[in-house]
Length: 321
Length: 317
Image (cartoon, rainbow over all chains, first blue to last red; front, side):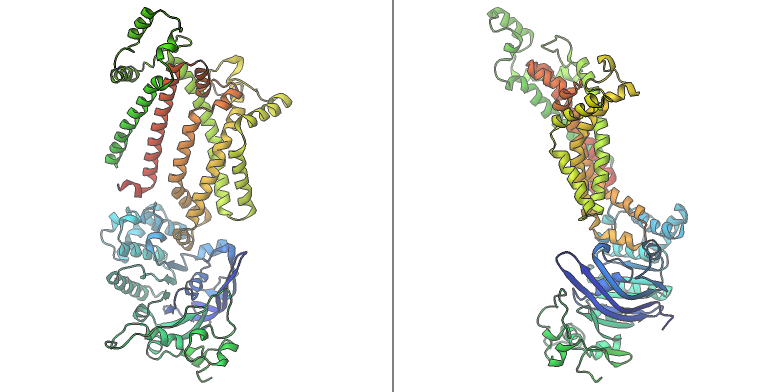
């Protein structure tokens, strides 16, 4: 897959401060093709957002140690200089965030925040940028666009703010869009609108999308492929269909068992006991073993390899090698 | 926005009235009968009564206040007890001198403070941060009068490059923009700038650290903005709060530092107040405090309006 849009090999991210070191990501490998949608699924602290931010080197510079290979659109993200990295952000790869209220600058208008991105990367005039901003608001289906361009973030509803955020992210037609739980902070009805919008834009523009969420329903709605993340590693990877129907890893099965879906009436929801691992100390074996009902001695000695068929693999010793 | 402007200006009226009431009562709060300040203690009773009537002191307090307010509104601040002259011309000169000094001191203090504070915030936790904060703490801790005298010893006595006292050559205080006049400004302005510098450094540092931790800064980086573009956003976000503190500091500086103006014999409001206090010249005190308080009120109004112009969220209520 040398023509992959994203190529990640053995990505490790540590946050080092004087008091402690947190091993947030401990060896992640994946590829993403042009126009493909990958969903990274996991609970808080599993390293999914850190992985996403690592793809455009947005983790805080001063305390982040990143190693491994990360290539996005042919650029070596780990080694590239900060100036060139800034030139890639927003143009080749851009990101939308969970909370559009805090992710937008409160004292600049929506129009200013869109225009400055376009002006930065394409060097066009302010009036051309204004025109582009107007088109972008139409693209993300914000009504009365001209008026909304002059609005400040606090004057818009949550759904409109997230649409404006998407407009900023798409303003320079990036090849890769990273979405960090973009629907989590929104009402259920607005969530589905935003998901539908993202899916339509993704298809129209042919972007690759990496979508981080803890919501299985959202993942099923938008993804081509799902990666389940736990303790800073991908523990399972496969097509939406395969993972949702026959989760291989006990953690995936636990997630599915704890989620409401069709045909569940009368059934009791199960929970995963325990809490996620403390990533200051990475366990030697499978990170999920302490919470796993079917753990064996072998789980504790080494991190299991990904096993299974090429299209659907999981890190579990109980799968046939 | 216009409605907000009108309402905000309307709020100033009760504040101004309260301030004038306080200044008026100053004469009556001060121990003893105000008449004692005008006449010698052994004045005959009929003279006392005559003077009391002449000054309107025989009327009830609310009426006296009304009359006084009427005079003040028409620009008549009364006469000095010590010199017998009208207060306004002297006060005007002192205000002008203090304004020059305050403007110079805040130009130095606010600029340095903003730069040091922003540097400290950007390099939060490093030795750069600690040095900037160290300078700030030293700035607010060093006593004014001591620093002033040390500067006089170094620059006037030892090096003999700057004048030690006064506001202009030959004891005059007529202002003009040339070195002959400006050199008198250097030492007092630098001395006076040290405290606002320290306060602004710490304020700006706090504000900018908080802003840099906000999510939208990550968005800005994620859009690929250059550092200069990000700084623009941070500045506009920091401005409302920083301006509020700067406004207060400028207000304090306008009150004139009695200590600094005394050390450098700078004929400003601090100097005037100091003299008035020693001479128990209550009308001068009254007038000076009133004018300075009004200046403070107007300054705060200006800061409020500026903040509202910068931050759209403040326009709502």
